[in-house]
Length: 186
Image (tube, rainbow, N blue to C red; front, side, top):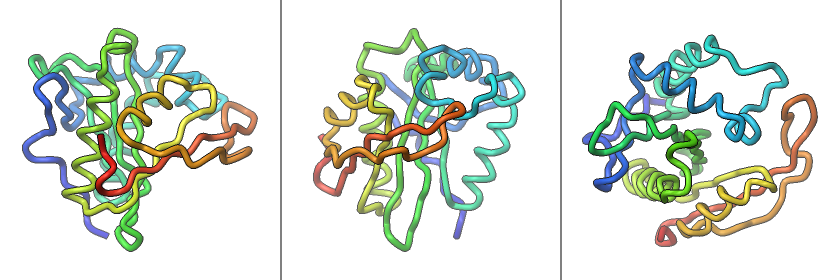
């Protein structure tokens, strides 16, 4: 499998800009993802999230990209790209089945402003077009109502619940699954 390319130019709608992570983003990336709401829904280990996890994420991001399996991007303010609003990723990329998954998280100051919806639309359009993905999946916790609303707003269809789907913070968690096919993005 070949490396996934970074979108060039970076993806933007004039409000949100999705770009490669930079080492200078480390403090903002850590602070945003360390927020209790991100930890509640996005941090699966039972161990506390640390700055070392953030540092390690940069290397893991590049390993996944070079393997053609995933691409992680910073979600930034399009007018000031040094302001990190969150992160987004395309992962489980499988060219043979033309499928992939998408995800996102937002720092507290970015929530409730439509940024997650804008982010998901930008990344999904790019994956469907540039990567020729024919099925995108999005998963979230059953109690993550905000992520479910974002998925539906973008045209993802709720397919159901994957019971006891994954290890999560020392237990197992159900997962809601949504999908998006070409022509369905809103």
